[in-house]
Image (cartoon, rainbow, N blue to C red):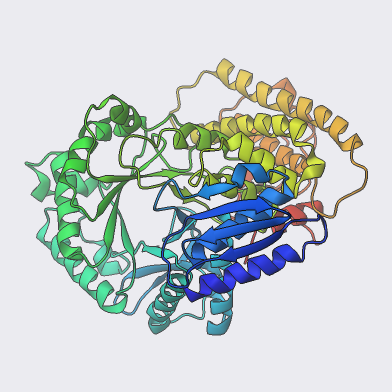
Length: 569
């Protein structure tokens, strides 16, 4: 953990060099061989004493003091600070590579074009940011938006770089979760995913042995159940088994194959509300079947983890109504990094998700929350705010709104959070409605009524107009122009995306709306692209495309400024 000690010293030096405010002096102490994360802070005669259980605890403490002092909320963070949850993982965006033995391995995106030495430097910067945000674990795994990169990595480099990454993480006192893909080759893709199939079982056991022969130091292996695959239950070997029996069979196969070499995080994915209700019936029984080294993970929402408009997973209600407490640890997945919801490039925060789901983490054996993000931000971006609040909510019982006030006082005092906070909350509600509209676009046979469509889209567009008017009052209070993007800059780019998503939705359903008949803004935006056409109205708007990756914006533009402050490495 010697890297954590170096980081604590570095953070203390950065703190002492802050010229914007007159901060008290920080003196920190921690046993070099300590392993805990807790720390205590006291203030007397202009000096803040930080007494930590370990260098990692000291790094957490100094990083959090940097922000709380800048936000003038020192009192909230004095006294004993200890994490509420032992596991605080962040699932970061990765690219996937196929190793020499055919296993798909995910690595952080900066590794695609970096030399070995550059990767080491960037990994240290990554761990620095993760500790600043309050997390203690990194999940390496591909997600729905991952794209294969043109890379200098060859078969042999994949395991070498993964092992180096894990070792460096351990030097900082952090843990690593590996989410491999055991079906990356063309031959393995033809194997039925039924856990009772001898071919599936043999292949999985062999692949796990090959993985541990190459990577023995991972702390957790993450497995996403194959239960959503058609052959999982329709294979001939599954003819006499129920879905719950098949899931238990898959779980036991994994547990026996791991042989205790690392802990298992077993994730039950859900496609929609109907399947979530089905899963909630047998999830308590699955928890009873799990072994001591297994953690059961599930989406906080009833469907895709990134679909923030969906209701809570019914399993939450099952847990609330159950008089019994399972010995199995639980790990819900929350979209703290707003994947598919702007990813920090819109003026919205994940406060509603944190408030809704973190408040449910009681009584049962919740080991933590798995926070999703495609990118890590610079200090001061909107994504930084969401991830910091989500990280701090795993440390202390302060409300998300109180944590928001601290962050904005520290990084964006000129945004006048008392007023802009309400605007961002309204923007978030618009973003959730846009998420719902995109889900309807994806459903070919949606039965939504035309009048309901018009009401919803008109409400979105009129709300955007009102917000722009409210922003004018805040903008007048600005004494001088900051170099960093303003709230208005965020809103202007967001409104282009929002307008185009609405128009795309109306085009898909062959509808029109008087509020959408204005001239479509042709300027660039992050998540939508106008392919052709211009002029008045929906029909002449041209084809609107959704972007898989955000566009950066013109050099020197406000849009590029937003992009850069929400993208690190």
